[in-house]
Amino acid sequence: MAVTQSTRPASGTRDFLADDIRRREHVIGIVRDVYERYGFEPLETPAFENIETLLGKYGEEGNKLIFKILKRGEHEHTGEADLALRYDLTVPLARVVAQYQNELPRFFKRYQIQPVWRADRPARGRFREFYQCDVDVIGTTAPTVEAEILGAVSDVLLRLGFEDFSVRLNHRLVLSGLLNAAGVWASQQNDALVALDKLDKVGIEGVANEFRARGIDPAATERCLASFHQPESERPEDTLQRLERTLPQDSSVMNLREIVALVGDTPAAGRVRIDLSLARGLSYYTGAIMEVSVAQLAGSLGGGGRYDGLVGMFLGRDIPACGFSFGLERIIVVMTERSMIPDAVARAGIDVLVTIWNHETRDEALRLARELRRSGLRVDVYPEADRLAKQFKYASARNAPFVAILGDDERARGEVGLKDLRSGEQASVRRSELGATIRSRLQQTDGGR
Image (cartoon, rainbow, N blue to C red; front, side, top):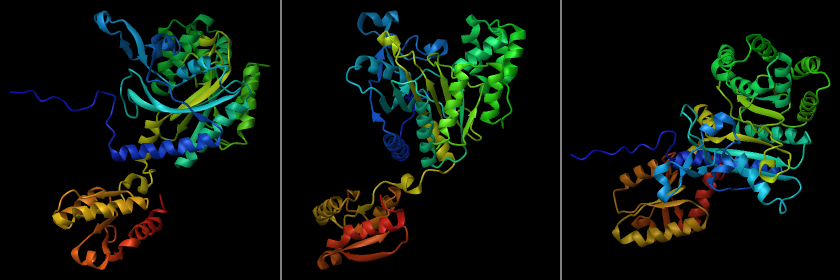
């Protein structure tokens, strides 16, 4: 007896049917439009990179999640790898900047929307293959960059219909200053940041356990966690004043103050909270770090920060850079659960189904479909001469609002029967006016396409 083979996609990946793709394209379209309005240009890079391009850029946790590609031929049995699927879009960007440094503008602003792969444990809203929507500015340390990025990110969320989001802001050097002040040794600070980055998953006691497991002094642990604790409702100005008392004349605190002030003139105004526990686990961050959170959702919809040293790993000299990345799948999951996807997007498919009256009218049906397509409509043709009831049922399954019927009487009069499946009404329309009639009715009900 033959064994039935599983048809499920690999764990952490999904098949995308038509409605899924339409939801994704709806979100991507808004993201792309906003980013281009802010002056960012598109970029695409290969799905895989040389393995040395990726290794050592993401810290110990990130390195474990890289999907490696075995060398071909005689090397396959050894487990050696020379390529890897891209883990994010930031390191490939740094490679591109180093490769094309003489061809890019002084301030290189790019957005990139492509899939990435991580050998992570799948969970709700977390996949092994997923899209990222990145936006980055290369070439300046000016805090106007962070303000513009946070403005663009907030603009995207507002356009998508989110109202209950907040922006968490911190600085890697502020974190280092607080760790130093708490008595955490410099050699232990990377371990401390990795543990702190898990705060929203394991809680304060879980982070304390991680500190202890990594050999950090208990007294330093207590002082450290106390310095990162803050009231949920604390205003940015109050946090800044507290930091200025703990870290007087610290340039990173001054940088945070500048960013908060500049954000006040962007769509992110009023949404920024300085969160001292925000760590962002990736090791390439060097300055301001940020995440966007939505009420009643664990984790974030996206995050980013300044990484002034990453391009230098490829170029041999530092080039300032700052960016942000949305997790597209998480956005779509939340929007779907909250019914935020417009009905016209979710139902979009075809505008009209052309029926086949009988075997002899197949060519006439194809000609009518061509006429309607020329008028800008999305048209399907029922492939067989079948009972009209079956053809209407198929049209409903395709979410087609209209059905065109070329019956004998209609053809004799130069007309076409037009049935509106939404209202159930049916009328005869002159064939020469059919396309304009359908378009007019679509615009009345859906606001056009």
